[in-house]
Image (cartoon, rainbow, N blue to C red; front, side, top):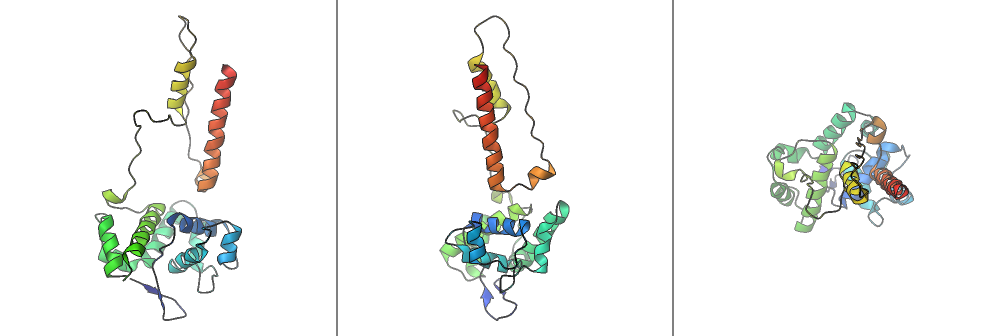
Length: 227
């Protein structure tokens, strides 16, 4: 399972750092073209504080930077868009984890089987195997790869008593609370539709959080002015 560095005979361990931080490192390489990716570069962009070396290691394992941290030709696939990006990232994952893909069928594999693979074939310990499994699954989801039913994140359903989410349901709930006590029918809330534009698709996680935070504040202010 363990891939070997191009310039040495030392095996490259499968990535085992914080999954979110390593994915942020990948997205940073997608948006920028640094001369070198090292701990200092990642600290500048506040990527995985304290675990920068693990992020660099994950990019090396994926073949996106060389032993000196310089972006490789493979990293250019990250800057493509649409199907080219998806197919490029999937190929990067398949090459990096070629041993796992030859050992397991991800369409039917379970999390336990992937974990056991890292234990028996990659030779890592239980704690590291849990982390490598988590990152591998998150990376496959990032690449839009087909996974077994147990590996896909559960669909979020409305729970009883849960706080309303931004969108039409919140507007309906708010309209009922502020409806005037009269025989006239209460005004119906306008429908809200979000369109996934190419520009929105390029936003990273932090930019999306900021966008929806502003939307929430705008809704709150609009209803306060109506009252």
